[in-house]
Length: 421
Image 1 (cartoon, rainbow, N blue to C red):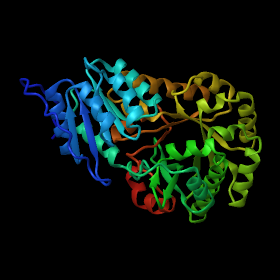
Image 2 (cartoon, rainbow, N blue to C red):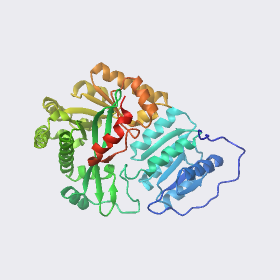
Image 3 (tube, helix red, strand yellow):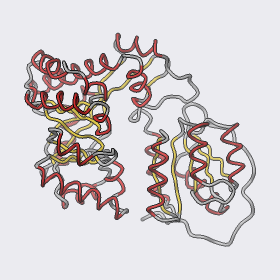
Image 4 (cartoon, rainbow, N blue to C red):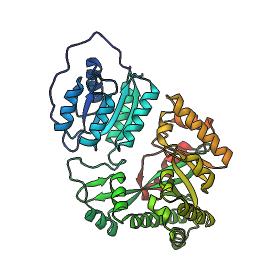
């Protein structure tokens, strides 16, 4: 039985003007902002039903401004876009300044195009966007949002009441044993066979718990620590791959390469040396590179990438469609894999424009002879739609959430048969 979407009864009285106590560190708290009092109440009730511990709902934009300036921290902020006294775009600007660690859900009846633009703007401000939903918003949609919100370990979130980690703490983590490798499997879209895994850096700090990569990677790049993290991740990932193969599980690994690595002329030799150390061929490794990162020094990047391909390392252009020079990169850079950004894949079942972007990207892959990988596959329906469009490899929460690297053989033995065709 499906949950019903919001339906509008007669208007009720004003939303109570109160500031509820916030949840403890282990809980979740939400601020709902919508000038329609009924929508405000209903979304708040649905969030509580979906598992949010503490919800504050306000139907006045200026009151929300006061709460954002003085209250919090909030785990989740749900905001309408069209509000007369302080609209949703202004609200996101304030959230980025006052509550930057909060996750955000946007909702609006203004149309998919405007909602997509608002989502892109919020992401560009560094906000963690859990969704941008058209009204009416269903309980099923909100439950999905709350699930993503509460996946703190998988998203490597930490207690917002704890001070941010310092550079000294990160340096100690790089030199010690606090950095760990998690993996997310990638499956062949047609057969369900294990194509490979993407490896993900996790920092388990004694003081802060699991620290988000988005927080410590930028810190590492700005303080000369990123090369140490990259080499550690590369070594641990390839060591795990070698161990899997010796145990009879033949697969490959994909490692995210930071922007600065693309300007390191010694990177190809370093990678080959690490692979040889663990008894692997370089073609068992894929480097994932964001397209925007290549524009800092395109000549040097082309030098590095070409030498990597000469040594048989696979190269994937990551988050395709989110940069500014996608077609130029595909023409000149020697990529042999394209990863479609999860935001398009997750929205493709309900949003025609996102589906068109995915379809066009897959057609481009076929024309250019690139392997296609779709991130953000959250349901069998996503998988089936991608298979119909000709996608090669799928990755996402429907297959598996990220888990510690040593668990892969057991996971594949237990879960693999369910995906094989």
